[in-house]
Image (tube, rainbow, N blue to C red):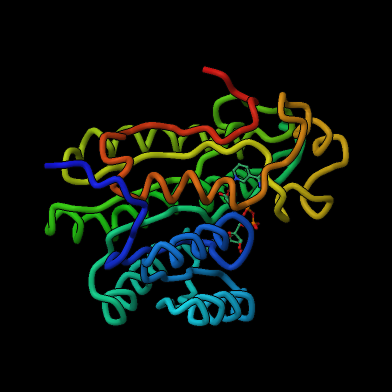
Length: 254
Ligand SMILES: NC(=O)c1ccc[n+]([C@@H]2O[C@H](COP(=O)([O-])OP(=O)(O)OC[C@H]3O[C@@H](n4cnc5c(N)ncnc54)[C@H](O)[C@@H]3O)[C@@H](O)[C@H]2O)c1
C-alpha cells in the first residue's frame, strides 16, 4: 500500500474522554479540524462540553457531547451504546480523562488510591474493553492513551498518579501486541502542560516549580500535545505500534 502522507481524519469518528477542558479539548478541536466527527466525553461539565460542540459545528464539523464517568463500567457501556446510536462505529479512541492529587505517600488512603487508579488507569481498561470488539470486527482502529512523563520518572507526593500512568504504558504495550496489526495502540507521555492540572487548583507552588525544571523551561500549550495525538491518529503514524511518544520539553530523554 502506498503511503498516504496527509493528516486528514476525514470520514473517521473519534471519541476523546475528558474532552471538555485542557488537553482533551485541544485534541477534539484538532481532530475536528482534520475532518473527524468527534464525540466529546465529559463528566459534570455539560456547559463546557456544549460550548466545544458548538465551536466544532461552527468549523463545519460534526460533534456530540456525551456524559459518562469513564471509571464506572455501567457508564462506559452506556457511552458505547449512545455512541453507536449517534455515529455508528468508532475509529479512534483517545483515553485522556485524568485526575491528579498531591499527597505524601504515608497520608495516602485506600480511597485515594482507588480513586486515582480508577480514573487514571481502570478507565482505560473499561473503554478499551468496550470499543475494541467493534474495532476487531472491522479490523481497523486506533487507540491513543494519554500517560505522563511522570509515569516514567516517578515523583514524590504523586505516587498513585505515577503508578497509574506507568500502568497506562504497560496496558498500551500489551494491547498493542495483542491487537496488532489491524489495530494500532500507542501512548503519549506529555511533560508539563498549561491546564487546570498544573495550576494552584491542584498542585503546590513548589510542584509547579519542579514541573518547570526541564530543558525547555516552560509548560506546553495543550495544542502541542494535540499535535502529537493528531499524528498518532492519522495514517502518517501507521508503523507506530506500542510506542510512547514524549512531547515533554526534554523532561525525559530515553
Ligand atoms: N497537564 C499536564 O501537565 C499533564 C501532563 C501529562 C499528562 N497529563 C494528562 O493529560 C490528561 C488531560 O489532563 P489536562 O491536563 O488536560 O487536565 P484537565 O483537568 O483539564 O482535564 C482532565 C479532564 O478529565 C475529566 N475527567 C476527570 N475524571 C473523569 C471521569 N471519571 N470521567 C470522565 N472525565 C473525567 C475532567 O473533567 C477534565 O475535563 C490527563 O490524563 C492527565 O493526566 C497532563
